[in-house]
Amino acid sequence: MKEEQLDQDSFRFARRVSQLLEQSANELPASIRSRLTSARYAALAQRRAGSSHTGVVWRRWLPAGVAAAAVLAVLLLQGPPLGSGVPQPSSGGSEDFEMLADSSAFALAQDQDQPGQGGDVDYEFYDWAVYAADDEHGGEAGS
Image 1 (cartoon, rainbow, N blue to C red):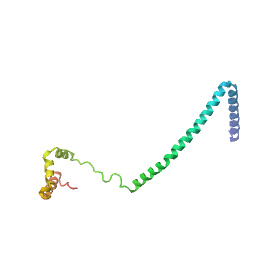
Image 2: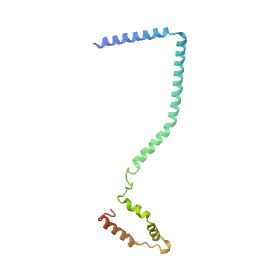
Image 3: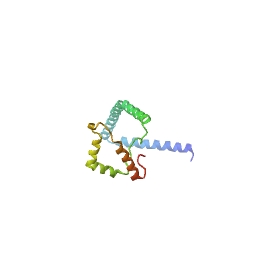
Image 4: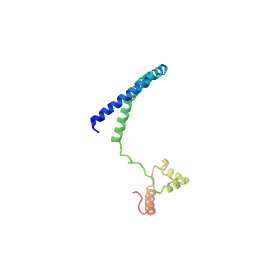
C-alpha cells in the first residue's frame, strides 16, 4: 500500500465516522441533547475552576519546595559522609549487660569520680582493665 492511498483511506474513514456521529447526534431527542450540552458545559467549567485552583496551590508551595531542595542539597554536599561516625555494635554485648546489671560496678564507677577524694583518678585500674582485655581477647583491645 502506498502512503498516498493510506492517507486517502484515512481521510475517507474520518469523514465517514464524522458523518455517522453527526447523524446519531441529530437523531437524539432534544431533551437528551440539552442535558448532554449542559453537562458538557458544567464539566468544562469545573475543569477550568479546578485547574486554576490547583495552579494557585502549586504556585504557593513552589518557593517552600525550592528552599527545602536547596537545604537538602547543601546538607548532602557539605555534611559528613553517610555512615561515618556511627558506632557499630560490639560482639561482646553480653559483657556490657552483665556490667550494667552488677550493682557493685556502678558504686565502683561512682567512687572514681568523688570530689572528696581529691579528684585523683586511679590510672592503675585502667591499665589493669586494658591488659586484662588484651589477655581475654588475644591482644585485640583498644583496636
